[in-house]
Image (tube, rainbow over all chains, first blue to last red; front, side, top):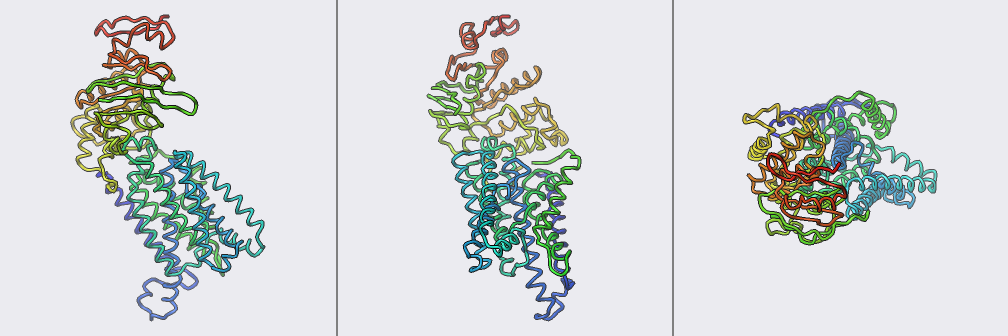
Length: 334
Length: 261
């Protein structure tokens, strides 16, 4: 660890600097180019200031937090399951959220309560799945069992959502489908700042549990032999990642691939020490989604693309490239 | 001292470990022998609570199964049969043995942990007197099978346990590595005044390195005595179901077991 400190500082400081640059770029670029220093140089009620404070800053902060939380959740779950293909979506958490949203539309709650109803039902769906997983883990311990249960639940939720889609009106169907594409266009300042608080709390919890994740990387049984209370740690990690994912899904809909691709690439570049990988995944996940959102609102004029679509195309492309590219030997530290 | 009282365990497949009672003596190595499927590794799993088991397991008079996970890890250390080829640096791997002594919020190991890990690495012969950074930076996937076993023993010693459990530590190793691993076990057990319980298939290695033997057959204790007493022709032939010759080692006079072919 002592020898690894300069490496950690290099990665964290470098990625944080890059994140700052991306945020500035995201604030500046749009239909009306605004340089961030115009914040200080204009009147309080000016158009530039309003656009920055009411539209671009909340949207960029939302993208940063959601990207960070999804990516960190992915890296934690990949460590927990010792499987590089696991992410919040593999475990059915997003499937539960989608089912919740489809139900909200079908029951008329989305029309009556708006985004609060959609978000609430998405949250209930995601948490319900994680509670089922936790109950199953108590009944039948072992990460492999948990992963299989997650995949099965994901398939079940997907089938149930399709059933609800087929039962809904054409108008509801369009709304549900648009929601599942993922979007950050409804971000508000209040929402963005509360999301920041949630993301910081989640990041702190992730960092505190990261050393235990290094031991989980040796296998659940070995970790237990080394004094890790896996009966507590596994549910804690699952609950943490479920909460983070539920908040993301409730805020912005389905945004896939961030939790899969970012930790995967970072593990190749920076090694598999979770004390570095967890905070680094948060920062780079944030960068990734901020850039995806920037592309989503800049590529098409007028209008914008759903950020989930841009994320899927970029993330999927990167993932295919990684699969095709010959692998170099890793030299990680744990 | 390890005391097992009426320990039983069962797998859903039907295999049962039945009413195991025996005890070890401090600072001695006890080998668990028996044919395949006799329950040797299952017994270690039962002791560690990796499988549900009934009965009582006491280490130095304290009930092992009633301890917290961390306290149990400070009392018993396990060297598994297979150590995964992970890209984890050797020193970091060995320092993981200090986990049961750390608070949950501590993210890194202390200088004292590092010094202890270095001492244990020297004890098992994986580090020289001078700190060789390159040797310590080697990752597990760059070590040979024997070196990985020694690294796992060093990690287990970092737990400063009263009982060391080794599950077939010589499996898949060549003769030189088998001898060096068992010599290290013998040395560290006598130095630490801990007990060691090891599952071993090679009866002659067991004869050479173990003070006592626990012989299992079909999940039951067939014999639990001093090594020379257990390695008797009638008992071994009955347990293994094959004809055997029992001779004497020409150098140390210990029993030498050969198949009757």
